[in-house]
Amino acid sequence: MISTVNQKLNKNQNLAMVIIGDRCIDCDACYVACKTEWEIPALQGAYRTKVWQVEGENNLGEPTINFLPVLCNHCKNPPCVTVCPTGASFKRSQDGIVLVDPDMCIGCKACMIACPYDARYYDEQKKSVDKCTFCLPRLNNGLEPACVVTCVGGSRNFGDISDPTSSVSKLLKNATSITRLKEDEGTLPNVYYITINE
Image 1: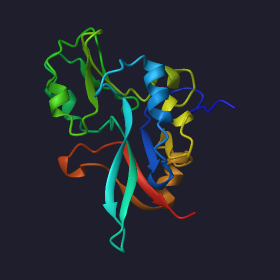
Image 2: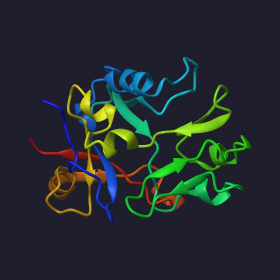
Image 3: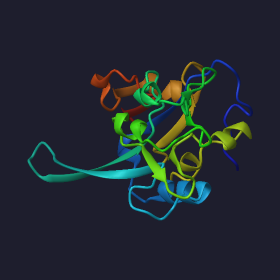
């Protein structure tokens, strides 16, 4: 069965990704799906989404490895948009998605430097900065982002958090903890990392 999101995009949505941290198994299905969907060059650092390995320790001092899916956070206050000299980087008012218009991008890379999430790369072939778009063409066809559809563990969840009946709103409501990366930067990110009791 094909996953869908609201059948059609409506105006005045707040689209977000909610990631259940302990469900990510570092299978790289999201990474491969994204690379394939968007024909991203096979270069180190060229990605729209990926999974970082985070080493740590548990309460007993034993080493642990956790997996952290990362992507553009489609911030409510995106510094990448503020620094763009041409307006190539912009935020859609109807749903909060942050995009780059490749025809307006001059390749100055100011947005790459301004992004605290390292979520952009420069595509030499397109001569433009590129980044996650929440798979906007898929959304326009009523489909979820490729990374969400292929997530084996059900870690990635997507939808409109302004809709209290959406799956992402319910996940946030029932979460035992909610984290957003680098909140102190004032970006107000729309990617949430949660834990839930199951």
